[in-house]
Amino acid sequence: MITETTTEQLIELIKQHCPKGFDTYYEKYSGFLYGICFNAVKSNIIAEDIMKMLFVKIYTQIHLYDSEKTNFQCWLIAMLGCTVREYYETNNIDCCFKLEKFPYFRIILKHQDMLLNLKIQQSEWIWNKHLFYF
Image 1 (cartoon, one colour):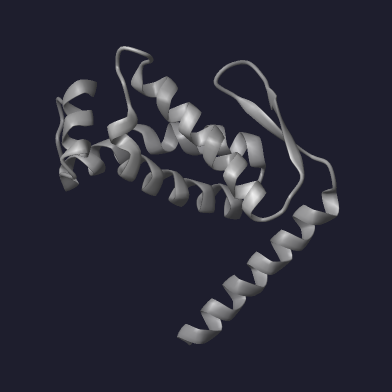
Image 2 (cartoon, one colour):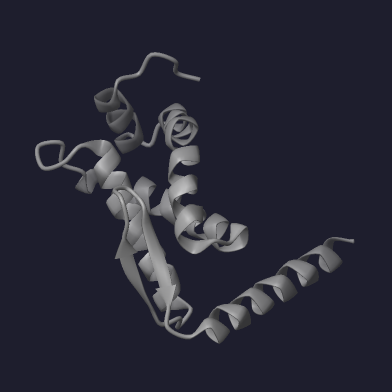
């Protein structure tokens, strides 16, 4: 674990695909980002899926970060918002975003039954996954 890493050093480590850099990023920001994500989607399963997508996206798109345009935390939150939107669009769930007090936002579903169907599909997948391993 890297203990005294500046944000600039952390970004460079991630850009170099250094495992310690990504581990440090995860330790430093995952709880914060998960909290924002869960507050928006109100589901542990969905928040965990989105966080997995987000970490992959950050790892592959870190080269797009420009410290002259925004700070790293704001960039991460923007990436999270895009990932949440992508998750809902990929699952054909019609929704809109409502910005609350920054950095928090909320997802407003236009059809509640669509989320219920998604949760049922995910529950079946988790159930089948556990049956597969037992």
